Image (cartoon, rainbow, N blue to C red; front, side):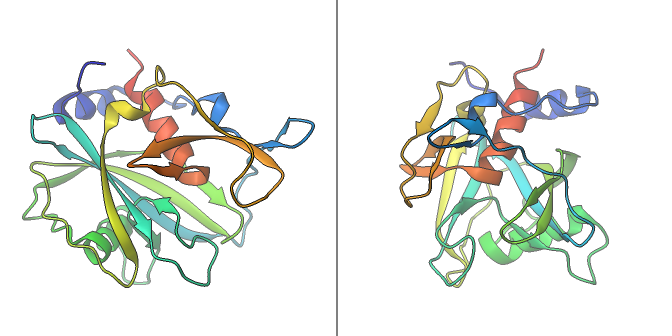
Length: 214
């Protein structure tokens, strides 16, 4: 699979039209044993606003890379999961982009000015029922690879992966049975041996579908 550069990502984001392409159908969870798909419902009025940063930056050979985080284990809905840097909107945030950049600074040490970060677009917002967050994915490009420094209170590991790992031509990874013992089957991505599923996989799937559109 040919590499993609950050400039190509920027061009495809800017050329995107509404409605944006949807994630691959194989990512959608299905109820077992009958295989009935779970429909992702719309955000309820009381959903808490949040934002996630889909940060693209050049890798060692100029290829477009993405950063993800593995969350620490804690008593909460998303303990140990792989996710984008991000979190809930705070009163001082000007908009969702400000939230995403602030959270990335706190979680992985991103310095938007030093790293030459430019916000280039956004993906479809989605609701995460267990935590009742309505997450807006903000896409940005950095001029250089940031010097990532994880906040060990929140981040167990920083994961880096090429954007081409999420293009529509990538072979599905089907999780069946669910490792947590839940009666569901779902599609996922593997990043550095970690299972990436749920909202994070849906965002990656839509981003890959957009980048794969000519």
